[in-house]
Amino acid sequence: MKHIEKRMNIRIVLNKIAKIVFLLATSFGIVVLGVLLYKVFSDGLSWINTGFLTNKLSTSPEKAGILGPILGTVWLMLVVAPVTMIIGVGTAIYLELYTKKGIIRSLIQTNIANLAGVPSIVYGILGMTVFVRGLQLGNIVLAGGLTMALLILPISIVASQEAIRAVPPHLSEASFGMGATKWQTIRNVILPSALPSILTGAILSLSRAIGETAPLIVIGIPAFLISLPSSIFDKFTVLPVQIYYWTLDSTMVREYANLAAATIIVLLVLLLGLNLTAILIRNKFQKTYQ
Amino acid sequence: MNTVTIERPKDNQGSNVKLLKSVEAKSKTIFEAQNFNLWYGDTHALKNINLTFHEKEVTAIIGPSGCGKSTYLKALNRMVDLIPNVRITGKILYDNKSLYDPSLRAEKLRTQVGMVFQKPNPFPKSIYENIAYGPKIHGIKNKMILDEIVETSLRNAYIWDEVKDRLHESAYRLSGGQQQRLCIARCLAIEPEVILMDEPTSALDPKSTLKVEELIRELKGKYTIAIVTHNMQQAARISDRTAFFLDGEVVEFAETNDIFNRPSDRRTEAYINGLFG
Image (tube, rainbow over all chains, first blue to last red; front, side, top):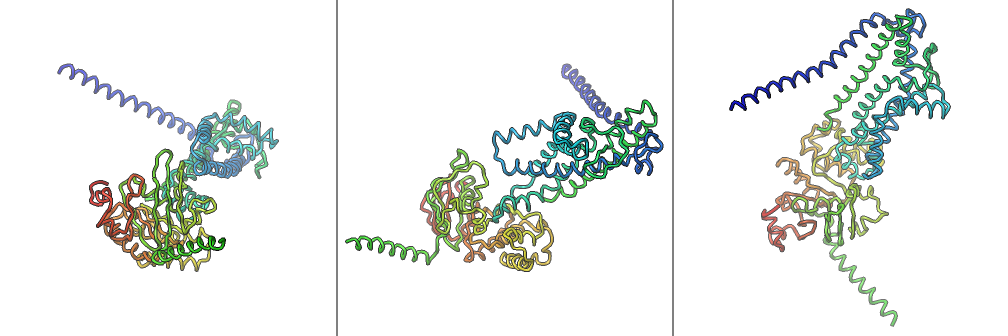
């Protein structure tokens, strides 16, 4: 009896310790995030005004604005979004609906999963080799966009595959049962049902592309570009790259650190907006099949 | 000599045709399975099936779970094509043409042989769009023709009065029984000859079941219907002929009255008396 009593105390103490350990683990992330946000907002918030959003880059901090990087990000997404959507959804449809289960399919599937884990800088080197030098595009929006598209394709393919798999099979059966061809069934039944989830996945992978820096630095984004990009064939810079260079130069001009912080806030707002859109789409269409 | 030997078989054929015609006059054969076998991978799901379905009759297929009755139904409109690793021997004739002939397109077959599924499966579209789906995929775009098909199909499925004021509402807002009758209407919209029904009332409450049965009785005479059912009373109530499947084989196939009152096989008798299943 005494033995059990003693064991009981130890067990209860262990139980409490476990709870504290997990609480600490959770708070670590929250505290770091809190400190980061506090630092960024206290450094940058007062620098954000209409001039900052609509001016071109400048060496003097008071005149500097981020219209160039904002436009660069928009142009980059105009390349990344359609390329990833078309290739990603196409691949997912082929893998889910056309290939038979077998060695080749599981080989492709494993490769896609592995590609999602490849460091982004490696995609930068690939983009440099293939698009910038191989196709001689130079460091323009198109080359950067294709590189970024490669980077997020694995994520987008897997998300689209899951979306297609989630379409109840009895819906496509109904369509086949009326004499529809496979393509008619895909276009009229499977894709409309899978679209909300496909879009959610696409938006989330786009927000990854918006935040990426390394691949673009590798393909040779200019460190200081005053002119604004006006097509996908122009040189460009994007928000995270601008943050990187301003932080790098903040040892020379202290105010660059504030500019970097202000740009981080703009980037965060943009990303939060995108994620919010994804959540809204998901919630709106979640209960369609009840 | 020659002429005689040639004429004799001709004569024989003639009388054969006559004999066939006299049977046809009563009821034409729509489906005829000849030594039909089907495997899923290594599982021998249908064994040596020989069955004939007659035009404009209701044929019920009964039997315990896993006996192959749904598989057989899906073989009739080649829905089994969609399942990987299916192997087939023997043949099924549809209107005297082999179903699994490569020149016969599954898409064409399925517009003549429609299907109603176990669980009501309307599309997440409006009631109108659900019915118009079939005609649309077959190329009908004219709004007036579509309107007419939608109304006729819904009327023929006896659901028009319940939905005529809300054609553009989502089909998911209908009750389960209404959804299933909508699915039958959707099937009628492609103007099939045959309607295959795979346990169409197993997901419905008794009242909705009765309504679907009434509908099937109304459709009888206009369409050839094959219905798989777990419910033996249902088979007795609505069908003209009944086939009893067990372990992938047809144990007995006869007029429904005979099967339920004078089963010739002991296994059929045991099943319909509820001794197993």
